[in-house]
Image 1: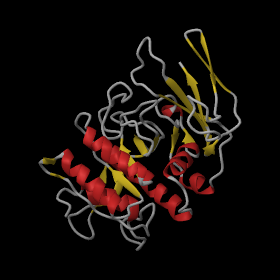
Image 2: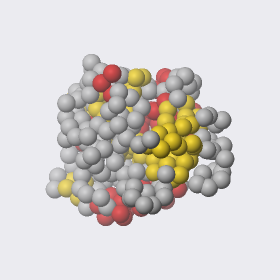
Image 3: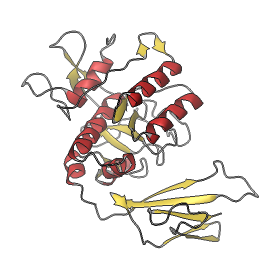
Length: 294
């Protein structure tokens, strides 16, 4: 049961049916598994973990997470990692503190896990909401999140305008559901890449999100690339420590992984040659992830 209306508002944006009344969701025929661990007086991370584990165990394909707060939790990280291993996408609100989460992480959206899609809030003018968190490496893309009209829990005919990255997140979850319904062979990484690489570039998101763009359902379903290569850098050791050798990974994609590329880099005058041949430090040949030792 929804004690505050927030969950019902989110659910309506994802899946409200098209009955010519109120609102219609992004993916109106999707099945919803409603799991609640928060109430008027808050909630516990341990119960969030139980919800995630329950969703994975009962066949959820993706998880909408319009919530956040608290410090790093290894148990929560591990549960999202288990969801990743089961192929489950974890769509998460970036948060409403106006912070750069690259330097001030907001959890769970800022966990460094490949199945997390962190969402910022955009207003009707294509501007990042003043209170929306952002991050060039920790927030993936934007979605409408200001003055969003959707269902609330007061009655079967109650609706309201809410704002927040909580409202932006279900737009992305809805598009992700459409993508999976259109092609249920998509892996979590493929689905995430398709969402990011087909987003519509916005000046206000450039250098403030991974994709620099606003989610776009039509582009995502068309599945075509945008002709611009995307690159995501990760390191084997974080933080990097002096006197130790680490691997630097460059994932190159344009909707799908790009193989056969030439990837080079420079760190303080040290040239790096990245390879995708499966020889150490590279793990897998021809997967679009190019690796160099530093």
